[in-house]
Amino acid sequence: MVLKSQALNVKSCSRLFKGVDFEVLGKTVRSVYGAASLDHGADCLSISGVIVAFLKGLGISAKVVAGEAMWRVDGQHDGAVISHVESESPVVVMNTGQMGAQLRFHAWVELNPAWFLDMTTYQFQLKMDRLDEVDGGNTPVTWKPDYLLFKHSDISTFNQVQSSFSSGLFYYKIGGKVGEVAMNALKEREVDPIDVSVFSVAYHSFMSGDLGFLVGLCGSSKVYVYLFGHSKYSVCDRVAI
Image (cartoon, rainbow, N blue to C red; front, top):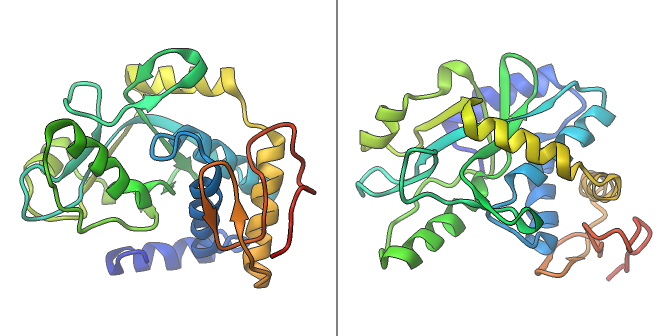
């Protein structure tokens, strides 16, 4: 669930973007990527790209944006910060696979010049677990919203997130060196139209209540069976359970 502090933002965006059910959109992301993403927890660019393509099909002129981001995921533990910030260490980095490098950045969605959407925040526990594996920590994650809808005035400064003992603060900064690298990576990799089509079918299956199981290379979730993200499969490759 989205935190109560996000409720007004969700309500405002639901009126503004009438064709989108953000709860269902988030459920679709969690199900599809939980089942089929080979880089789950480091797939913000793929998630954002597919969401933007899907939203454009609904007539919404969204776009992918990228840069730095940081979140405070617990208000009591001084180390409960997850960061995708070039100057910070440790950070969760993106495994770029065939590009053969690791890049420190985050990608999210600009719905319009005023509103932004991040559908990856449900991964906070996974990301913190990976950080704890590196340093042997056991850091609590008490704030892990399914997604964030936010505007510029909701964003805290880097120092506020870093030094605060209030969970739920977040910092986003578009552009810079890491943002430029991320956008270049998106251009090189492009968004697979099959991925978008499968995502769309899954979304509308949730909307209609036509639920079953989604199965991919990496797990299963409660929707119909789709094999996602691999060109040898088509949208028709599904098995009703």
